[in-house]
Length: 318
Image 1 (cartoon, rainbow, N blue to C red):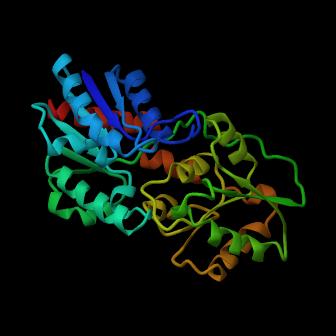
Image 2: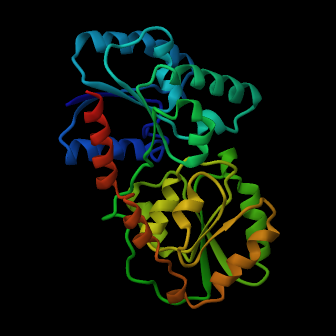
């Protein structure tokens, strides 16, 4: 089986975590299922014109090669579908920002409407959470919920670090990303500082080994995002059995349901975070762990299980 992957999300030199979950999903398909593939990366961060330029590049690639199907990650990477339709199946994975982006009204309005136009031409639409599925219920016959998996070997609990009086709290992204809501995170940690000695780890542009190492040193991960699809950092933290407090975004409530030392806050008021956070931090370090890894494996959200699901979908279309 040969697949053409098209995406605007892929690691680049100055942003090595950008689309890392897409890269890892493709790699797992190639490794586990021996999928042959080519990839077209549309660097929309460099210039929005690259979306328009990609139309001809994609057409030329399809004419020059034989593929069994096309898998698009992030809907506007499928802009070419508004200009021509390939004679092979097209899968589109939505990552959340297409429908729930935070980058200005015009960007949000245009992106959502272009996305909805593109989705009409998809053979299958992969969503990461139930909210996206509900918004797209008019496409219910095309929808499949398949979140991105994690590397269960890399993201696992290491030996607990030594007891100290400094509590390490993680912020799961770069503070510059509006949707991650750094101001709420700082409002929460400013209040926590009045009772606990804390240090903050910002998961900004780390490589995969650095992410795994830093997660294992955390006492707590706090996610304050306005919107998410199926956040990898939450699943990776769960793989390491870390305590988590998060806003109710994406599929986080489903992931963390009945997981010890993991709490959902249905609010953006910093005061609502304090009680669940304190309930974790008052414990000894060895008692702050969760059973998140057990939950992830039961849900089949390791990358091998996800590769199997994707491959089964591919086979059903060709």
